[in-house]
Amino acid sequence: MEMREKILTFIEKNSRVDLKELAIVLGVDEVTVANELAAMEQEHIICGYHTLIDWEKTSIEKVNALIEVRVTPQRGRGFDSVAERIYNYPEVNAVYLISGGYDLLVTIEGKTLREVAQFVSDKLSTLDSVLSTKTNFILKKYKDHGTIIAEPEEDERMLVTL
Amino acid sequence: MRNPLSERIVEIPFSGIRKFFDIAAEMTDVISLGVGEPDFDTPWHIRDEGIYSLERGKTAYTSNAGLKELKIEIAKYLERRFQIHYDYDKEMMVTVGGSEAIDVALRAMLDPGDEVLIPQPSYVSYVPCTILANGIPVIINLKEENEFRLTAEELEAAITPKTKVLIMPFPNNPTGAIMERKDLEAVAEVVKKHDLYVISDEIYAELSYLENHVTIASLPGMQERTVLINGFSKSYSMTGWRLGYACAPKVILEQMLKIHQYAIMCAPTTSQYAAVEAVRNGDADVVAMREEYDGRRRYLMHRFEEMGLQCFEPYGAFYAFPSIQEFGITSDEFATRLLKEKKVVVVPGTAFGECGEGFLRISYAYSLDKLKEALDRMEEFVTELRAKRK
Image: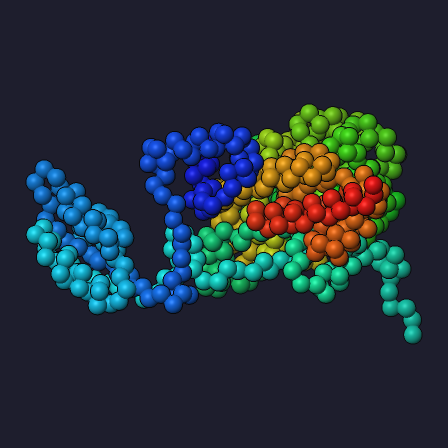
């Protein structure tokens, strides 16, 4: 594996790793790792360092929905301009162009069901290029970003084996 | 009442780690670096095939030597990874872990009085299995200055007219030592000169960090005098499935198979179906796990260096074998005090042979976070020991 790939593979799972430690694990010096990271941030290969939170365990209410959107592509700009109109709303978490029965998959986060419903009916559906929407509320997250949300597993191995 | 027990069995000692269990059982917040098995779960696609085989009702015995489908895949794997060809039908059997293969090979090959050369430090079962097979274990004490590799001179010095079998335990548990091609070539010359047989326990073959593992059976003239043992436990993180295999010349394998047939019948069927998936589609998992271990290995060596603990660089398995001779206490005392004072479990080198005195086996089959915490505690302990000695 290339050094960049090694760094990315590691930090994709643990972006909080100490630089020095990462350098030791990868068997290179710290400056190399720091330079590569800086370059990849610059090149927008690394787009952010986020935190995976299980909001269910907090007192904060969150409602998430996946919205399937059918749109009319625009002459010369295809789906990009309508996608941009949509992703600029701060309520929108993600926008993907999809092959298949609809065009855009939009994920929304709101405080309440009503807030999300209102966003869909007031903002999203009223856009000129939007033909139809179908809102799917997320009831429970089992796994997100490759991480199983349930309790971390205990090490079930015996303490000493030869 | 008559004594119900066999004297020979009673004379074989229990393994030396019992007491660490007992001490640790009374404590909370213990961190262990004492485990001899991977920390990864078996990759899901392999588990899934095991489950699927149960759903299809694949719950009967397989043939004694193992599923044909599995043996064909193993033969392809050995060819692909280690450039050695075996006839899956006549030279291969699937066993209950590498452990059974060691036992069966020794029983098939030894007559009373035959001597078996066992390099130590090494895994704990070679000596008792030799005794149970009526053989006489002869220990070769490996040296730190040779990075615990076996040299031709050491081998030559241990050979007597009664020597029949040499055990080759590399990559090594507990030292992490490997044998490179040139090391193996030197040993193979001596083996051929004295007309010995080799039982090569290569269960850690996939965990080699310097170069691709070389099997001694692939050297000229060696396949006909080698029993090659490997398995799924370490490479695919499948310890609990209990599945290994042995490859050997037909004359030896038939006799091994006879013992297996009478004592075991066949290896677990579910495990065999899962293993087909492992060898067929598991190469990428092996690479990913090896990379992960390699990173931890570098971290561990770095920490030893930082705390001034002398340790040769181990290139195999997932163990390091640092020296604690500077502290002037035995490995057992060091390990016991480390557990009692800092709640860290390590295994004294003496559990793997007398020449392990002065060393500890540290396993890095743990997440980086766990390793870090355990090594922080160990560093404190080492610093305190040094302060007291001044």
